Length: 83
Image 1: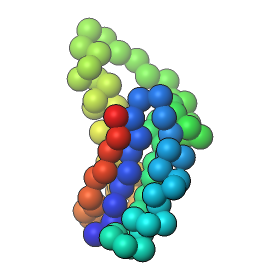
Image 2: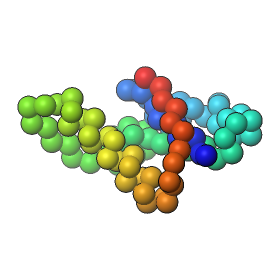
Image 3: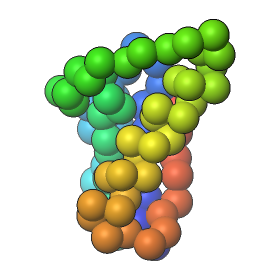
Image 4: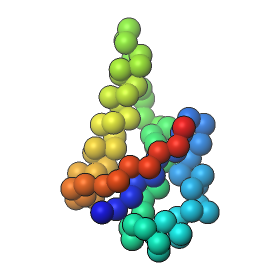
């Protein structure tokens, strides 16, 4: 099962560059490190919030990862995250 690495606030996928080879060879085979939307070299989509900022932000980022998963035809992955 592939590993998906997501960075924390104020970082980017490049944060993981020193660990990608080791994780790939020793544990997971396929490792993805994504830039969350608005960070690193990702696109900067317009983000609109109403009164519930936290839930809307969570939904925005979860849906973006889900869209990536579907576009890449990945059924399941192990999530590794840093915050």
